[in-house]
Length: 224
Image (cartoon, rainbow, N blue to C red; front, side, top):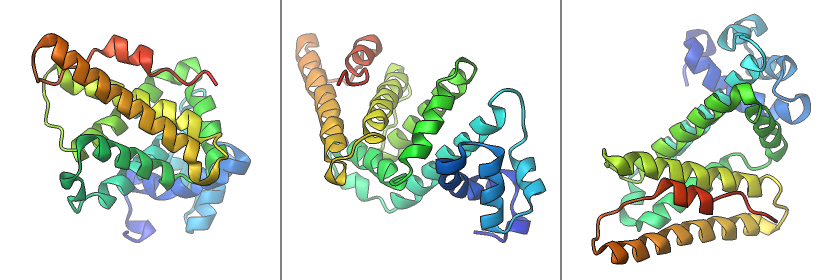
């Protein structure tokens, strides 16, 4: 990482993001959390505010959350840059990527819960959807997906739904080693794979094809 004085504002956002997320456990996604993160990184608070300019209701908070997501994206891409996913079945590639992201925010359940509450506000919904789509796209690309047709969009919509549902379980999971979350994720992925195999037989073809509406209905948050 370059010296803080040499960072662009975008690089500074990502550099500050993990510290902001840590402070958000106590201060929420607030100016106080940003000030705490800047102090921890030895960055001028005025400069940190330039990296996260206030722009309307929840604007700065959403920018901080977006930077946090981007920092996790970067960690994931660096972790799997060695090509180890290439030797895994597709379901294991996706599971490994999702699980890495969860482990990357372990201990920050409260920060996640506060972030989700902000993302759920009506004015923030479009940005939250974009964040989920972007992370799903990065996961699929790391998994080796090269689809450019209808499947490109449906795969990402489905994975974004799986990831969001799994996060909802993870943030309140108190089981040892997040065993309940692991089981939930496995069931969701297995359900997708089974349905796709059955559908391929019904259609008489072996080409991957996803039905967004049907899958999104199946991948709702757990009822209990």
